[in-house]
Image (cartoon, rainbow, N blue to C red; front, top):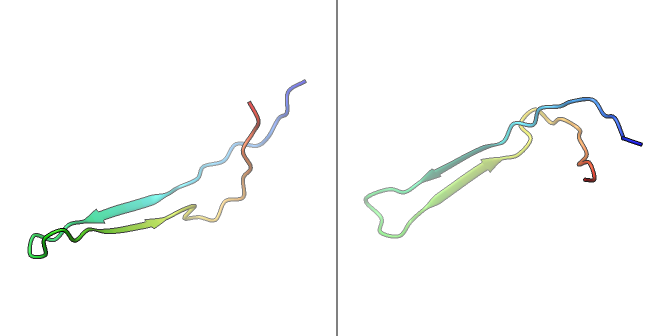
Length: 44
C-alpha cells in the first residue's frame, strides 16, 4: 500500500560573502522554507 500526498515546493535561499579587505572573513546567510509551506518527509 502506498501513501499518497499532495505535491509541494519548498524554496530555500543561501548566500555567502567574502570581502577582500578582511582576511579570513566569511558571512553566510540562509532562509529556509521562504513561503512557509507545511510538508512532511515520506518514508522510503
